[in-house]
Length: 104
Image (cartoon, rainbow, N blue to C red; front, side, top):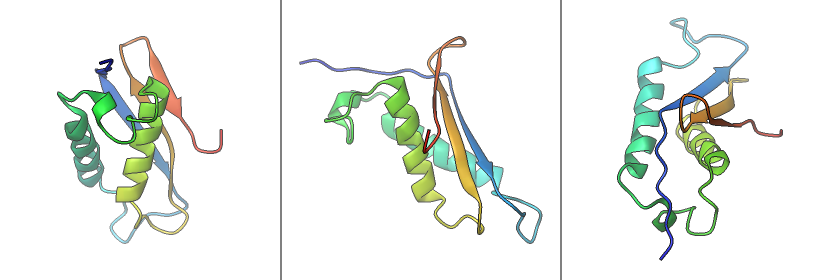
């Protein structure tokens, strides 16, 4: 059996939008942190190859960054009009990282 366990130090999710909501936020940091922590929790202490989509997709740092993008986007489907996630950066160490930007 071959498996891969990935350990990452940080995940950065960047969002942008044309305007703020009624209380002056693009998205509440508390909500965004909760979403990212939930995603990290699903991966913590797991053999990544045993989890979808990594049963068929290589669990490279690049694909993990895309996974975070897809999962955060799914959870933030109710962003204000015109708002979007611009990128996700995942650090494996202080000096190595992968970035996912849709359409690039």
